[in-house]
Length: 430
Image (cartoon, rainbow, N blue to C red):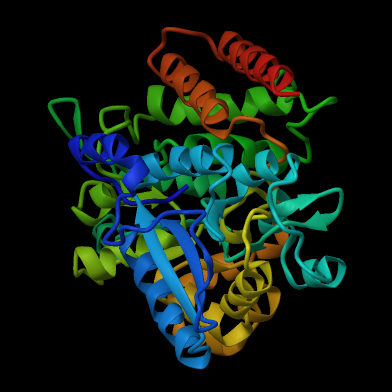
């Protein structure tokens, strides 16, 4: 999941003043209405991320120009504050008219009948890829419109010059070659890794890579009754492979795990040669670090099977049932989701389109050449499934991975712990 990182003290201040909001606007959810002149006022909330906020503002301006009778009061919040702010507003029955949701959050709201069903959802959902759509569906009905395909797997950042310096003239074409490259590209000083050969050790990618390696072996990680199944031979092989990259091959380590910086930040600082990360990180290199001496390439499949992968439903928009202006709110999110508008939003945010007609449009690829590795595999993505508590799920995998990679726990024991704790948590949320 991608979002801006802010200093802890800023987040704490925003929590304290959450009721007042953490944006330039002083209005809050639940205050929407039509004024005496017939002007419609809509409150729209989203999380804070520079590219995403900028893209929303551009389309809000366009919409208001086309609809001078409608005012969009756009408010933004740091990610950690935002998820709790949303929960509090819906609990208090004073939510915004329009809310940006991460797809994994949506089932909690839709199952409690808090969101408006998208009109003609039976036909609308055919316009999207399965993986980003999954979280927005309940009983086969659509309760929001996904804006992006939250793909963290399938592509990686590479420094071509680092490869050339080791006599490697092309990106790795299979998993064995990937590991071999990673070993050659790793730079050490006094047994300390200075440049990681293949960095995949991030909060999202450990879990996504683990799940995808299971799928690429032709197995499943979901069992019955919403439970996960991590005691299969395929799950053990997948996790053993990832642990070995740290413990045995030593092409990455745990030193930066959980730091304020993302693995992509370290890549753009020259501290890794290949980094497994979603295409959204491209924006950081081009805009924040002002570098262009990198490429985004495909990651080979773990097996001879196609590189299928697990994916969450990413950021999207939904309308609250408490809104007094549901028709106008729905019109706004449908406007954002129109082909040309959403294509602009995806381009400005460096996100992969959730909508098929955009992703399959040659013009979009022409304008976003870095996304080629991701666009080619979107049909291979599988929704991660009905995870009751996303943060808990990923934390169990990450915490146990660290114990396994540092030799404090066997792979078998680690997988057993992950499976048991996640399944217990799933049962608690039923």
